[in-house]
Image 1 (tube, rainbow, N blue to C red):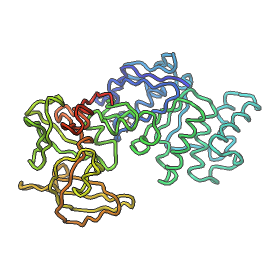
Image 2: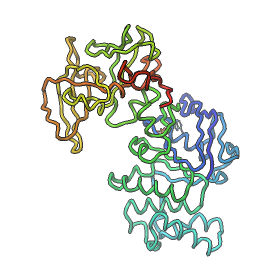
Image 3: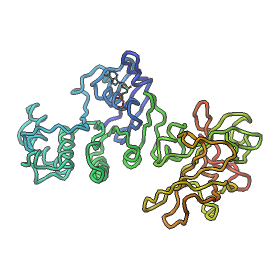
Image 4: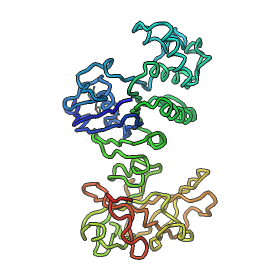
Length: 394
Ligand code: ADP
């Protein structure tokens, strides 16, 4: 087990800044998932921790040691990558023990360690199998056992489940969580899959264009995203956004079809300020179910467009009513709104209807900086004084 720290780490390739002034403090025994879109710098961050890449500037610490200049083998880490490269001509035992044999460990010690690692990944009894006699999931477990057997202080895993089919990926997620509990080792895990991040991490580090956007427990990233990027990236389907501005007594959307009343002073915004309202699909309700919302807004007129029954819920794509001439092909159109409703809801396509938002679950962002202004828009008598400040203590 070891703490891992990145201090002001920068990695530049010619004119690309792959990692931009990264500061991370990963606790002993913590499971941290680095998540973000392709090209955001996840792998480069990982390679910097592993020692496969030297940072342009900054310091990497593992445990109490400055390892910035140490080669990978002296860092006390083990890595598992997306491409499982088992030796095809070696059985499971030989694959797992390869590194130990290379380092001339005693046979008895190798036997003991291999057995322990194989049992952690539930591959005991299969030690004489050859790689081509195993499923993808089993091969991935052997790759993990090969990393465990070295008893590292830190595990680095870069998209280790990416090549597995969807069902197996879900099973392996549970296995990795169990593994983490059992080994109590620091795990740093890279994925572009936010569902993987949400389910496994103690904390998620969200990256965009080489910069750390937020590092927090999954539900904090979900409920209190630090900025528009995190709000849009975490959660599937994504949060709805509607650009607008602050008025004397609240918010009005750019297309004039949506206004929410609040006291700008309470929220710390100024009339005229460009803000973006955010609402998750599950916080939009048909007006008939308005009582399900903690603090419903006044009804908003919409027309249902497309329905997507998912089995456990229905996604309803809505178009907010407007007088304006709207180009609905524009993906960024602020007229589209996604609502998630229970599977037994009776909503037809092309139906005019009214919906409400749950005020206590609304988010407001400064449009220019992208930074969150508040999570939850209190009203007098509804949630007075509570859940207003972005940095609040709730
Ligand atoms: P991710 O893992 O999030 O997909 P990477 O860390 O692989 O992102 O890449 C971050 C950025 O750095 C990308 O723009 C990528 O093109 C660039 N990059 C990564 N490795 C190299 C390299 N060896 N040479 C030049 N550019 C690189």
